[in-house]
Image 1 (tube, rainbow, N blue to C red):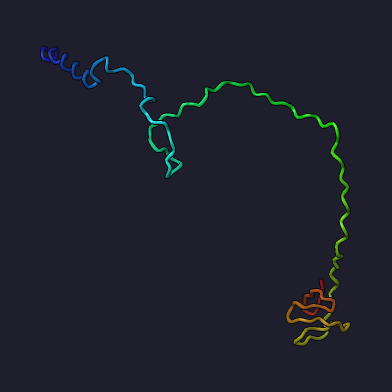
Image 2 (image 1 turned 90 degrees about the vertical axis):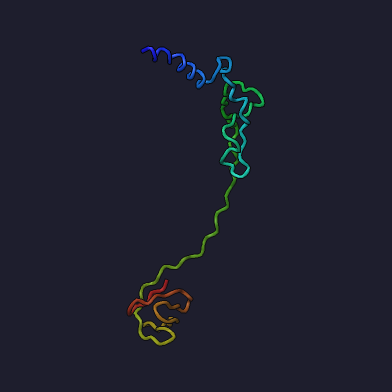
Length: 143
């Protein structure tokens, strides 16, 4: 017990030194005054050049202002009506004809039962008017 009482002042002194020394030296330092002003890193704009840093002082002090939202002015006159010219009629698209039975085919195309010629090879041919015709088995249909 006597040893403990003798060591108390030494422990208190050691704690005092670890805590920062003298009471007059423990004034709170202004951290904003010691830090540099924040700036972006010139090589990477997503990072700061120096961390930690303090924000720059505003150029002018900000003041509060009431937000006023006005109504749109009422239009007194209706906008002028611009006449639109009617579009010219488009080319008439022919409806596909009924399938025609095919009579005979050779290497250059086919003939139907009425004698009309379909030029081309395979299933895709052209009739005398230049329409695309499709062969489906024993029938030919033009579009």
